[in-house]
Image 1 (cartoon, rainbow, N blue to C red):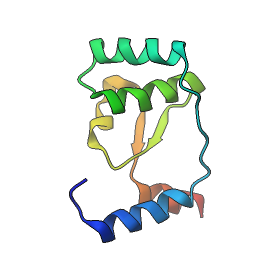
Image 2: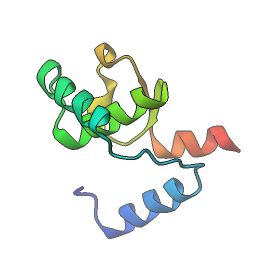
Image 3: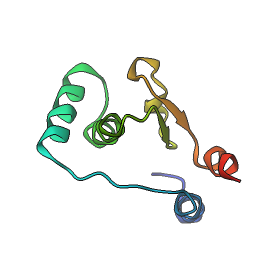
Length: 88
């Protein structure tokens, strides 16, 4: 958020190198987001990301956001550069 344009461009390039998939925003996803907002300290956007992972049965996320390091969330966070190295 605050790292500047060059850092954002580098992070974007690393992100685009990953095999991405997208989840439709459905009523069930919204219900899980609502539940996560009540049960965790996650902000709304983070809750959407976590609910999307849970919908797909995934346990890992690629993110620079340390909020996902909370072990009670049941996921493991990989920074972008680490994830990019894992793919090569």
